[in-house]
Image (cartoon, helix red, strand yellow):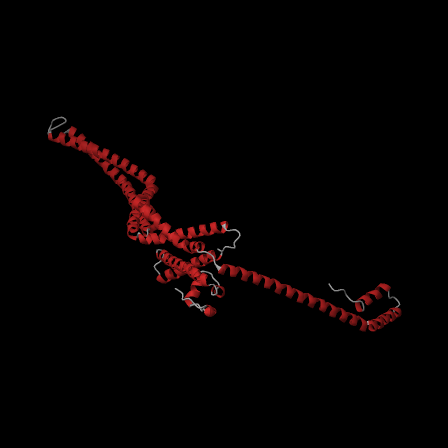
Length: 398
């Protein structure tokens, strides 16, 4: 509370440095507000609201930049800079609010929209900080979903070629299995023919057994040749399939390195939390409203507090300065006009004296030119006139 100062001593009021700082934040003129006893505290209140918003903005932006870089010096420097920007905007907003504004609706709407925009954005880092643990958990789940989506995209990228290779591999394998089945069947027929369990029923190598052996050996040779040729094809197919899988894994590793917990990632995680949690939705919007009110606090304080003698003194002082400026301009104009008038008179007198003193010399010079022209037998009048213009006649000023 300010001490009550006697009337005879009020002219000796000296504000403290803190008072002057708060007045500066509230955009009050120190020379005028010092004489307004009631408005001093009002503008201190406005100044404190600006100070609180300034500190809040600095902390919020510092945390915002901490999610983007690990350099503490850069984080603090950027946070201080953006806090100063918010301070400048708030001072500009409250400076334009006074009872003498003719158009109050448009500036009010503009200031409100600007404050709401800044407040909403500034609220995001604070909310992210308050729900840090929950957001970290949601970020981890979101990143796993991103990995799955990336895997699906990579599989879709290689799907056509992979399907083609698998079909070729299946076709070749079926052909090998079919050929091997023929070889196995021929071998069994040969064995049954030799032990008498099948075929002709005769034991030993007979003509029929020899024929079946030849057929078996032929099929076996064809199978080995086919196995050699198709085996190389299968190796090539398997190699290409393995390369595809290796490329997919490399792309997944590279994609994983880009996954982070930056500001946008955390903001997206917060949105996912809000959609899935009804209890969080209410608290989130409540916090947003409170944080926006903090940003709107200087403007609200300036509107809510009544106006006193300070605004009237500012208006009168401004009118006085305008009147003095107009009178000073008019006086300066009169002095310059007088100077130009006197200078013209002096120059006119100088020119009269100049031509008066050169009158006889010009006559003498013309006489010499006439004499030269008379002495010239072939001299023309035009040539004489040219010499007169060049040597005697004066040139007009541009």
